[in-house]
Length: 155
Image 1 (cartoon, rainbow, N blue to C red):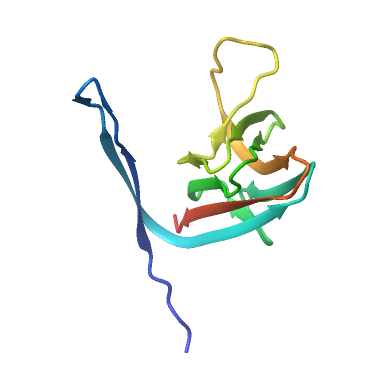
Image 2: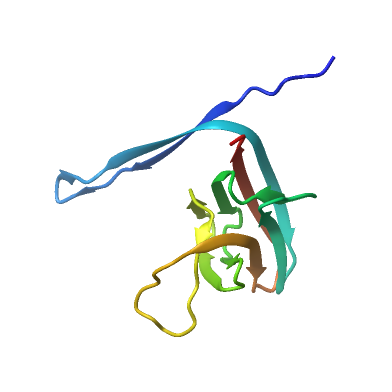
């Protein structure tokens, strides 16, 4: 008997709590993403001074850690190390790269796979492309752990 997957709803809640000068500056934002039918959650150990590919995206994906760029609705990358930062590079389909650092214990969240990079120093980017790959670089002298969580919809 074949099993039927039921689509789920992913709720991402961002909560900020801060009181400054006796004034509450906290906020809670909840993003609801419906029709999720695939979730991948993996941990990686990244060797010292090395780079790994943690995800590939394409219009017609096949294979491990490959996702449909049109259907990915949420990506979270968490640095599980308590001392070492990681460099995350997002490559788009025109092979432009955008890179951010995720400090120890922190996360980076994406709700879109549309990105762009610019090497000319332009003040503003005016167009984006589909994300192609995600690389994570560990510049430290010892290995570092990270986690990637990807949610994809059926349509």
